[in-house]
Image 1: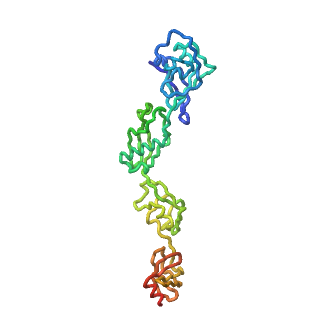
Image 2: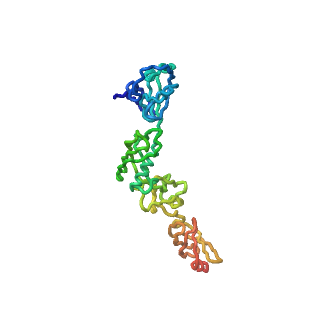
Image 3: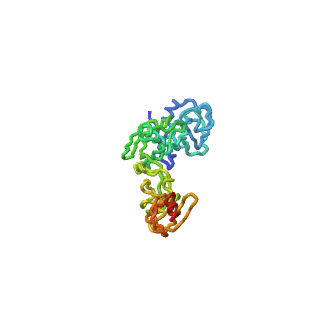
Length: 340
C-alpha cells in the first residue's frame, strides 16, 4: 500500500519546516480503515498548529470537537524535532472521510504539524564515547580523555519519549592516528535504533603547569606567569613538572615558550648572588653575629654554598647563600673567623 511522504527541509537548529504534499488519502485508509459510508451531523473546528509526540497524527490532534473519533489515526507525523505543513482543505477532506459532515477551517490555508523531540547534545555523545573507551582499556580515566567530534556532527534528535542515556553500540579506534568511528543510540528510541554514526578524535590528556608568556633564560617565573592546561600525554615527558608550586618562584634555565609542558631541567632556583658581586658575609655562632664585606667567587642560588673572599682579611671562605647579596658562615668556621 502506497503512502504519501513528507518532504522535510533542514533548519539551522534541526527544527525543519516542510510542505506535506498529498499525505492523506491512502494513509487514511491504512490507519483508519474504510471511511464511513454514512455521514453524521458532527462538526469539528480545525486547529492552525499542533505539536504531537507519537509517530502518527490523530484526528483529535487536528480538530476540536472530534469526540469519539478523536483517536482515529490520519497520517504519519514528521520526524522528531521537525515541523511540516499540510494544506487545510486536504486535512478537512480527510476528516470528512471519517463521517464528519462539517469541518470549520476558520479561513486557515494550512496546518502546521510539529513533532516533539529530545536533542542529544555533543557533550552527551562525547561523554558516552569517553566512558566506552575507558571500558575497553584505551584510557585510564574518562576525565583524562579529550574527545573532539568532527565539525559536521552537531548532535541529533530522538523522540521526546526516549528517556534513556546515550549508549555506544560499536566503536573502532586507532590510537596512533587518535581517530575513532562509533555508532551510538539512545535507549527507548526508534529513530536511533540502528545507530547514529559518530566520528572524531580521542586523545589522552593530563593537566600540567605551563607558561602564559615567553620567559627568557635566567628570568624568574612569577605565580602570574603559570597557568594549568590540559595537554596531550604524548607531549608530556616522564620528568614533566606536575605542580604549579614547583614552577612559581623558579628561574628559567633556558628560554621557555608558553603552552609547552615544563620539565625539571627547564627551571632552577633563581640566582641570588653572581660572581664578583659584593656581598655581606654574616658570621653566626651561639651568642655571636658579625658581618663584613666580601666578594663572591661564583654564582649561586638560595641554599647553595659558594666561595667568597673576605675583603678585610683576603681569606676565602665557604658560605651559604641566605638571601640576595647575603651569605652566612656558621659553626666552627664562624668562630675561627671571628677570632681572626
